[in-house]
Length: 181
Image (cartoon, rainbow, N blue to C red; front, side):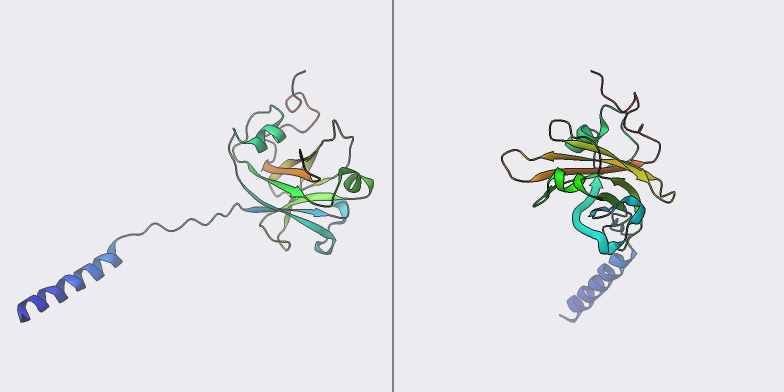
């Protein structure tokens, strides 16, 4: 009996030390969870007390995603793309375009994080939709777009927000960014 306990203890000790010796792969934190917010002001006057709506965290998306199809406008897919779809209750395009409003992507999903890209919510709607450019802020390295559209069968506005490395997708209104007729 003493012999068995001795081997059992040695085996347990060996297993315990082996567990520490095996290299473990770290859990990769998603450092690219950007956040997006609607402000009741223009991009020139952003302050976190002007945020009226958190419109989600922008996650890594692929070329075949519905978000890229809405925002890409047939442009070449960038090396990185982060996007989110969000429903906006109690807001209409008339509300957003009737006075100064902006949408901004933040470096992290936090109201306190630095703004990486911003676009004023202005322009002419086409078939009830609006597509705007989000311009790079403070050399952040990111720009993007936001697409607003009424949701079908709901009294809600749908917002798709996406960002990518600055300079990888032509701005709206350029031949590269405008779909062929």
